[in-house]
Image (cartoon, rainbow, N blue to C red; front, side, top):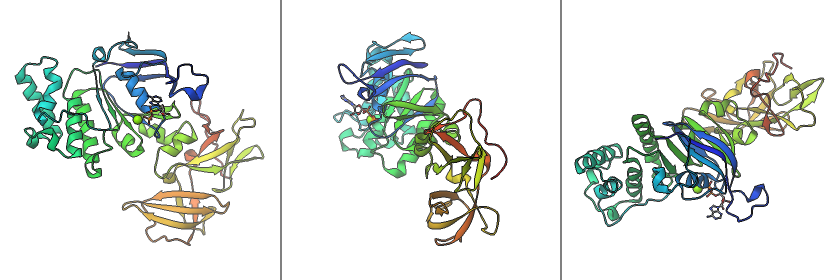
Length: 370
Ligand SMILES: Nc1ncnc2c1ncn2[C@@H]1O[C@H](COP(=O)(O)OP(=O)(O)O)[C@@H](O)[C@H]1O
Ligand SMILES: [Mg+2]
């Protein structure tokens, strides 16, 4: 097991990259701590597989260095790195049984057969494969094949990390949830670093200790799920994390303050913003619906989506802006109704040119309500 560090690591599939857009992975500094469960999250084509393949050694980066526990592994062979990788589609031996498939990575490392049997049984129990250990792999369903593939990645207890590249894509949705939980259990029980690549934010948020968000070959932000939710570094992260995504609302400077007409709020004008385009961000979970008779500005309910426990209300503000609100209350509220809105100033995020303002030495919106 190892602490994996990317230092100025970048990759272009072109021979002579000319500009930023030529990079599938723009140079980045990033640390994967030993033993944690990570999700690498981003839309298709943003460079997730490229990053994973550089860590496992399938791709040699065009610049930068890769360190395992301080040792330079940039040029090391895949075998030296001792990484287990699980791919989107099952990689198994169809001529072998399930047991033989699971045992193979251990046989290659000359484990004694009693130890192999014990380990294979344990992994089979974890993945619910115990009943089919004797079955030929070619007879399995697509789900089961991927479970065997996962098992082959997890069976070794001596790997530096397990890299999982969208392994749940071919798995039945019902089973995805259970499998994700099992992966978490395995991570906790074994302390093996796991990096799960996904384009599904709910998968990332529920699996990982830390989520690394990528877009266009660039790491946008990394941190614990709660932090990405509360303090998205830019509008993209705000949009990509959370469902429905962060509401982005117009911000109008005036009288040395920054006003949010849709919510009837104003905050002190952040300093040093010059000519930046300013906007507010607010989570659908942080907008509270109140009686219109109150002081709050109004909005009209346009649609209600019932998610079971929660509802998502689509509202039209007086400014014409669309606002999404997520709430467990207001079961009787239907389309066409006028309703008031209330937001705590502390839940308002301010963006300048799409970037969160005031992170670090916090820019806190001042108390007074406009
Ligand atoms: N072998 C390759 N040769 C050339 N371009 C590639 C290759 N693999 C990926 N790319 C390009 O690099 C970018 C990142 O791809 P990839 O890492 O596969 O993204 P993701 O896994 O996030 O979908 C994409 O624009 C893709 O077309
Ligand atoms: Mg990929």
